[in-house]
Length: 305
Ligand SMILES: [Ca+2]
Image (cartoon, rainbow, N blue to C red; front, side, top):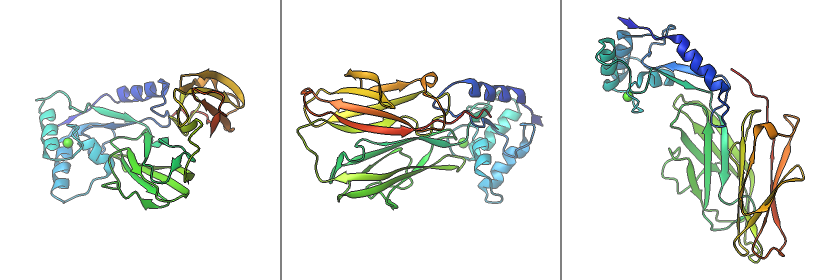
C-alpha cells in the first residue's frame, strides 16, 4: 500500500515561502521533505517500506542519511525510533490521517544569520564574561553550535558543540581574538560565522559613555531582508541616547531608542557595495564626547529558488 500526497501542494508552499519577505528565512532554494518518505521515492509517497527501513536502521542493518532520518521522524520528537515506524504503519492503515509533524517540511539552505557579543570589540575588559550569541537562518533546527576563540573551544561550555546558541567566554588577557561559531542543522549542513580581530582591553575610561554592544540581526542580508541594528551604552551616566547614521548621513537623530530599523526598500544603492551604519552614544551628561561604533555591511540580490 502506498499513500501519495499531492506534491503540488508542497511546491506551492515552497513558492509562498519565497514570496514571504522575511529575514528569518532565506528565499534561496526553498525545499521540501515529505515526512514518512524515508526511502525517498520521487512521488513523495509513503509505503510499508518506509517503516521497514526505520526498523532496519534501528537494528543496525542499514544506515540512513540525515535527510532520511528527518523524513522518518514523523512524530516530530527529534529522534528516530520504533514509534515512528509504528506511526507510519498506522498511517498506512488509515488509523491516523496525518503525522503529528505534518506531511511535509519546507525549508531553505542553512545560511549565516547573526553573530554578536554583549560587549563589542574594544568594550570588553579582562575578566569580563562575554556572551556570544549566534542565530542561524534556514536549514532545519534544532541546531548545534561549536564555539571557539582562537581555535580553542570555550572552557566553560559544558559540551561543544552545544545545543545552546549562546556561550560565555571570559578573556583572561588583553589581546586580539578570533571568535568563531559553526552551527549545524539536523541535515548536518553547517555554516560558519566569525568575529575576527576582537579586541580585549585592560580597562575603559569610566567617566564617559561607551558603546557596550552594537550588532545587526543579519550579517549576510539579501535584497528584501529588513535589518535591525541594536546598540547599548554603558559607563558614564545613564540614561543614554543613540544616534544612527548611514554612510555619514544621520538617519535617526539622538533619542532613547537604541535600535534602528532599515527597511529593505530603504537600502541605499547599489547592491554588493559596503554600507556603513554608525551609532553614536551619549550619556546624561551630553557634554561628554560621543562614543561611536560602525558596522559595515552589504546586501546581495535575492536569489529566488
Ligand atoms: Ca520520532
